Image 1 (tube, rainbow, N blue to C red):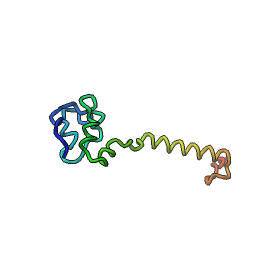
Image 2: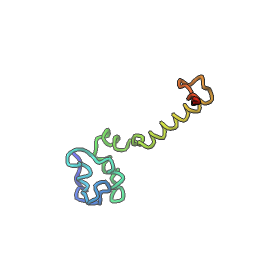
Image 3: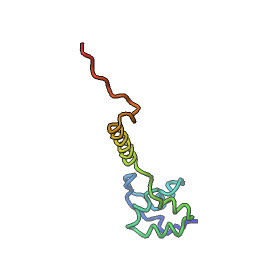
Image 4: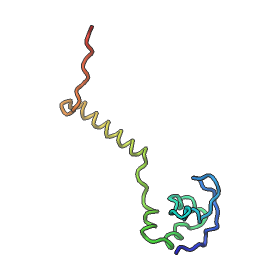
Length: 107
């Protein structure tokens, strides 16, 4: 069972836009820890040490794991791959599955 030493502390939630207690951030009304709990509370008290001492190791590990790639990073990666394929096709047209556009016919 997690200690409730800090549950009544309050900060302004950047996500919700109003004041919330630490209890809300660590339970989100019964669901789970807010994924931003470390970012929001580190200036108020040593939230990392508190959670590490009070959470099961696998739950704390999930909280501190690097975030998945953002949508922007994924899109940039896809763009880079497309540009690479385009450069390859331009360097070796035989490697491309697409046929170059035909010249417009004269009327």
